[in-house]
Length: 178
Image (cartoon, rainbow, N blue to C red; front, side, top):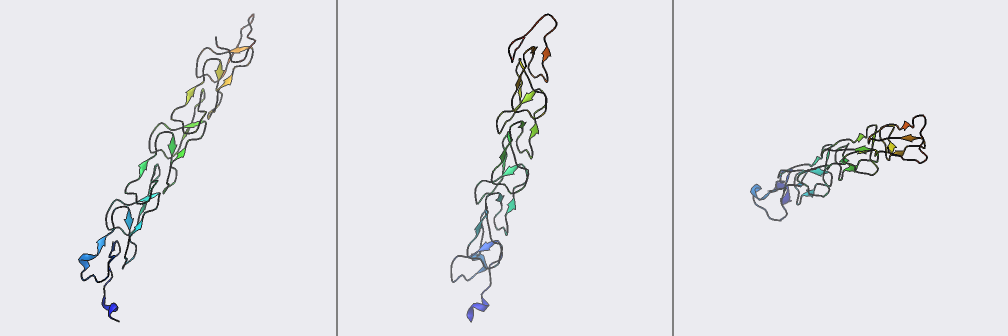
C-alpha cells in the first residue's frame, strides 16, 4: 500500500491530521504531556504524582519525596506544606503528620516526634505545644498533656513530671499549678 512509504513522527511528537507532507508538521507534545511511541496522533497527559516541564517529552517524571502533583498535565511538583510530608515518590498529595508528630518545614519527607514535655493533639501539626502548668508530658510523641495527680503540682510549662507536695502541704485536685 502507499502508506508504507509514510514516515512516523518521532516519539515526543504528534500529528493529529491526515495528509501531512513534512516532518515539520509533527508537533512536540506540550509541557505536562508526552508521547512514548513513534507515529502518535495525540499526546498523553501526565497522571497526578508525575510531571514534565519540557515540550517534546517521551515520558513523565515522578515527583521526588517531599513534593507532590495533585493534577494531571502537571509541569511542576509542589513542595509539601508545613505539617505534611511525602516519604515516597509520585504522590498526588502529601500526608498529614499524625498526632504526636510535627513538621515545621516545607518539603518534608517525614515528621518528627514531639519531645518530652510537649505534645501535638491533631493531625498536620507544624509545631508541638508545651504542656501547660498543672500538667506533664512524660514521653516523646505525646498527643495530650496529663493532669498532675492529686498531691502533685507543676509551676512551669513543658514539664515531663509533676512535683509532690512538700511535707505539711497537700493538693486535693488534679491538674494543679502552683
